[in-house]
Amino acid sequence: MHRMKDYLIYTDVSTDIDPAVVKEKDIHFIPMNYTIGSEDRLCEGLEDDELLKKFYQGQRDGDLTHTSQITPQKYIDAFTPALAEGKDILYICLSSGLTKTYDSARLAKMELEETFPDAKVYPVDSLGATAGMGLLTEFATEYRDAGMTIEENVKALEDIRLNVNHLFMVEDLMYLKRGGRVSAATAVVGTMLNIKPILIIDENGKLVTIDKKRGVKPAIKDMIGMVKNTRDPQYHRYYFLHSDAPERADMLIEQIKEMDPEAVCKVRQLCPVIGAHTGPGMAAVVWVGDRKKLEEQNKKSN
Image (cartoon, rainbow, N blue to C red; front, top):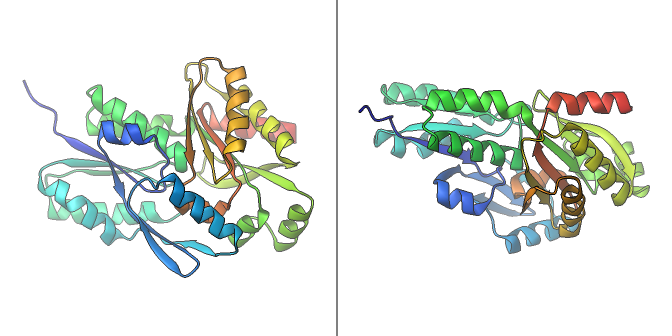
């Protein structure tokens, strides 16, 4: 009987995912660099909660945070040992609508396939981030375990990626201002008026503000309505994210469980690579539904 060639599943450390799944399913990470204040850090895997709490407290205390893209050489260095052992690589990448790392991965792929002519390297543009990438990575391991070839797995991921929805509420508009998402005037006025912007990742993988609510509870209520109207009833998996604001994740979880009694809820603190751009106090939910439907619903309601 012909044995399917082994392949490894990689993602980068901007992914938020259940640590038990990482361990059980042998998921590999591409490291990323970030800075907080004057300190440079290398993130090589899932960070522990205490480090993340310090990171977000540093932001509250005024430390500036920055991230840097993954270079083609970093991919080459990370993938070479596995390819030298005869394994292929499936890599789930942060959205091309948010960063250029997907381009870097494709450049690395071309060079690596020249060095290892029998090898296959498949970067998959998640068109998502954080736990959206986490869900795709979970699906990738399940598809692999079900016997899919690497090519079949890539196709399945590309088919399902726009059914993974991301909904964020951010605390402080100033972080979005630094990233060019809102104007300085909007950020100042919004912060003074306790405005909570609600954002999605659209079908092009870009971060888009779709609503603004005055206060946390109205924002949470609005988010739950969007999940209810767009979720796929076949799926009961939800990821909840927060940046040192567990009570906000708890509010989301409580209402999701009322809506979907079969909900399987996983909670993670937001990784620093994404948290550098959203700031402390963020809360998010990620679920399986129709991303286009989410955008259409928002357009109708506005």
